[in-house]
Length: 367
Ligand SMILES: Nc1ncnc2c1ncn2[C@@H]1O[C@H](COP(=O)(O)OP(=O)(O)OP(=O)(O)O)[C@@H](O)[C@H]1O
Ligand SMILES: [Mg+2]
Image (cartoon, rainbow, N blue to C red; front, side, top):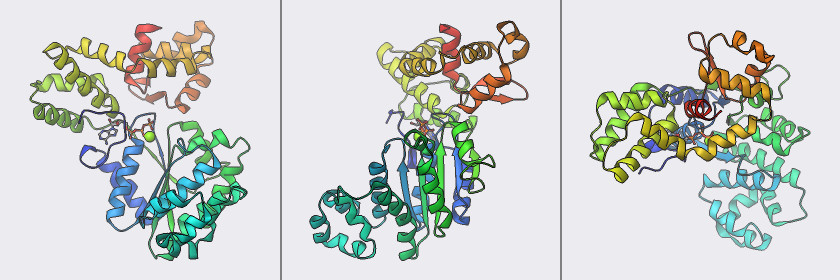
């Protein structure tokens, strides 16, 4: 399969050995975790892989994507459905959920309805949505308890809750429920660093001290090189070791771009009957990601501080205070915000740099 973009698990999931071990150990200790990384660093893949392995070790699991369930109703249903999946009851719930009679008559659902009557509320349009959500959040913990099995529950893109919770009531609800639970361990993942920090890290955060934070970084170079070498061999495409290293270098060990680069290389090879040089491959990558990159830029382009700061850092990350001085920019503020958005990284050697290697090239070429 040369498909890229969707979360990967099982055989397609590579590397991340340390992060996976750390995450799973925390889960087994009952220590909830926040997983933070910029877009497309492999957060969802890591969470799904950890859950799938824990499931094999007889944990109950639930995976809820807040981004794709952005209303109280959808969120409650998704949570309940995920819990029921552990007993393969979700399909019965989905097919019966619009009618109380259908639910009660469903023999498979009967046992769970006896213990968790709130589920019938999904068939009642007049039922209070907040109550249903509150009960769904409790259901996660109570279901595992009832069956004497530890539950691991992941909320992916948890920061998105803010989008439909302007007053913070939903966050408060989650906190009050989760704090009292004893059978469930949580993974909260998200890409917008500031949002996650505000929810979990600062002392005023609603989930302060509730979860350990894990930052997901770029992948290990050796893992990506070995993976590309294996995949090219499988497809009988001859690539030199040096060329593979160059691809991984071009992608700065970014998991998504490394996979995309290979896909685009295969495409180029099929269309042109030869391997692209690095410049040609870069063009293919930029063209494949054009819409995404333009969207990222559009989102920041109304702020001149962000624009100047990113353009300057795309050139190079050194002496940026001095170089940005003539533009009269509050560099400390801009870099802090951009770091918080997951767009900038900093290290002692390179200084600031753009976390998305293709965005860096795109800015250099276009702005
Ligand atoms: N461990 C991995 N092994 C192989 N490929 C990976 C891995 N992690 C990420 N990828 C590649 O990156 C892509 C994005 O992964 P994933 O959806 O897990 O990232 P994400 O951080 O959740 O992204 P988003 O910010 O869009 O939610 C995958 O489609 C895959 O090509
Ligand atoms: Mg994701």
